[in-house]
Amino acid sequence: MKYNEILQELRKDRALTQTELAKILNTTQRTISNWESGRNEPPYDFLIKYAKYFNVSTDYILGLTKEDRPYWIKNQLNITGKNKIHNIEMK
Image (cartoon, rainbow, N blue to C red):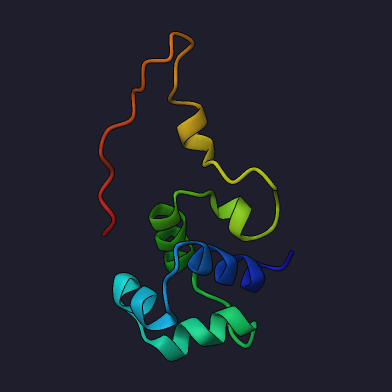
């Protein structure tokens, strides 16, 4: 799968319109449309925003792995199952 298809799939899985997602990410619907169609590529800061909002890794968005869970989440769980993750703010 290409990154633009993954971006679209993430949005649709949450039942969001492009306009709704644009408001969440502080951009425009046209920008979201251009990214999802593959006309433009999102800058890295928006890849990070996508990853944080959808709780996936940037590697997943870029199609480098099929593992959607972020690497940092997997590594912050200890073997007793206690979660060390603190609330992460999306800026």
